[in-house]
Image 1: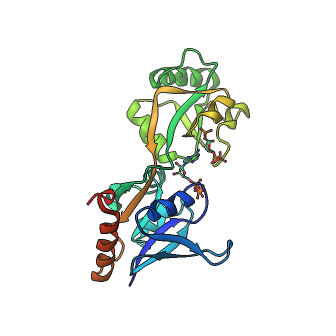
Image 2: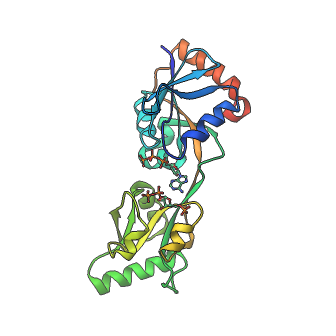
Image 3: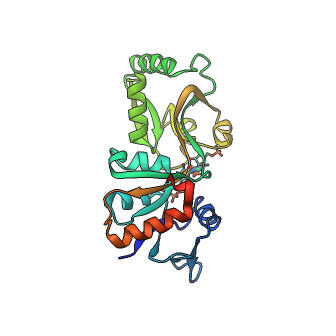
Length: 234
Ligand SMILES: Nc1ncnc2c1ncn2[C@@H]1O[C@H](COP(=O)(O)OP(=O)(O)OP(=O)(O)O)[C@@H](O)[C@H]1O
Ligand SMILES: O=P(O)(O)OC[C@H]1O[C@H](OP(=O)(O)OP(=O)(O)O)[C@H](O)[C@@H]1O
């Protein structure tokens, strides 16, 4: 059995993932036509490439269907319960950086911190009879973060895209989303809370703890790790 390496087949992480391996002497690329999801790993034996979306890679690592996978560190934390028991972080790859943050309307001049948000949330519930709504697709990470911060009177509303628009659309009062340049927050008149950083994400190479680690796949992993050198944490 060959070692299976899962990489993003499209989206913002794909090209830089290929370049990252390329810089380490591994020819990781798509093969066939633009539309065909086939790929290869040249420069090393015993490694098969599996093309997936970044969002699916945590699930495949967790199920042990791939041995190694590249995806955002935010997606692994969000999508794998007790992720440290299931996967090992081998290397931060230095691209795909984005911060998962909590943001509120800029016009909320008295709200700068999570403590302020908690106070506003309690008042909001008393006034409106329902809990302040925070739109996000990162349910697990946001819940854990707000629980630790002691923010209680809120509800999450699911938003799978255009999350910053939910405040203007009156479907949420606040958001928890990824920001990189900050342009989307600014354009939608939102500001981040000073202590509202939930996770600083980057593209990361992960190892599945539950994949089949046979003599063959271990040998391929050792050869790959030697190539990746210090960056693979060895
Ligand atoms: N500006 C940004 N906006 C959103 N995600 C970003 C940004 N910059 C980096 N990322 C990271 O990119 C990753 C998601 O990449 P991408 O959107 O290509 O995935 P995807 O395959 O579309 O995932 P899904 O199908 O689940 O939406 C996440 O880890 C995220 O943190
Ligand atoms: O800080 P910025 O550089 O402005 O980037 C942040 C924005 O980019 C992402 O959206 P994406 O483009 O993935 O679209 P989506 O909202 O439909 O997920 C993210 O959800 C933010 O909306």
